[in-house]
Length: 103
Image 1 (cartoon, rainbow, N blue to C red):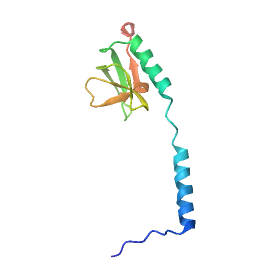
Image 2: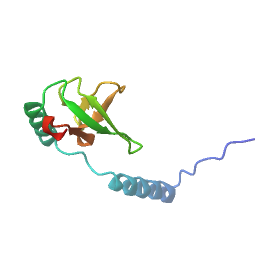
Image 3: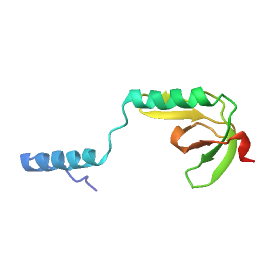
Image 4: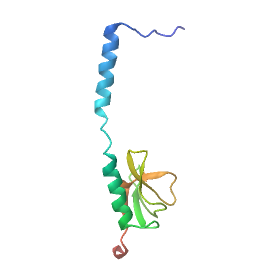
């Protein structure tokens, strides 16, 4: 069976370029690095490593755990933190510190 060939005419190339532009327009740009760094700095100034937190997992489940690192900006695009019992890091937006007086 032969592979279908990809048309290289100028109309198809323009159409593919328009489609790609539409796809890129749907992806929101990441927040500026300064805003992410500020979010991490604010979290770190209020909560030490070892802070009890709840984490909202991808499936919506919330679990109680503790932080195992300071918050940091990952690869210039996401404010994250590493937490105990979970491989990898989680977005800081999904972390809720547990206050001592909440019990």
